[in-house]
Length: 105
Image 1: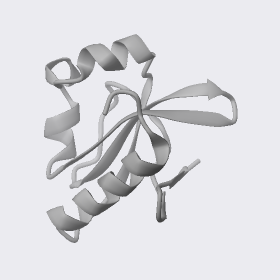
Image 2 (image 1 turned 180 degrees about the horizontal axis):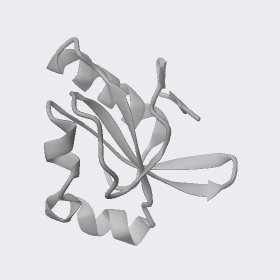
Image 3 (image 1 turned 90 degrees about the horizontal axis):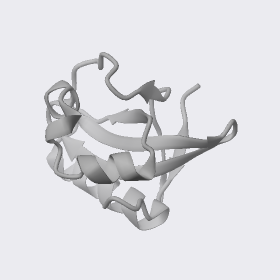
């Protein structure tokens, strides 16, 4: 089921949660490293943006916040695909961080 993430100013629909390490579709966007707190609540652990989701998320061990992901119990990633450029990705990323307070950002 796609998720709705609420930022400080807006809300955004993401892909279904995908297990970390899953094959990702190509594209640019905002990604949300997350975990299920229970069957109805998904907690954002880290929010980032990138031009190439496959390149950024395929080898998470090289991510600068990987240790924090492990410490926080991250299990999944959700993606908001954005094809309209980096500035839009940065705006959405910033809004989500301001609204969700992910512990690894």
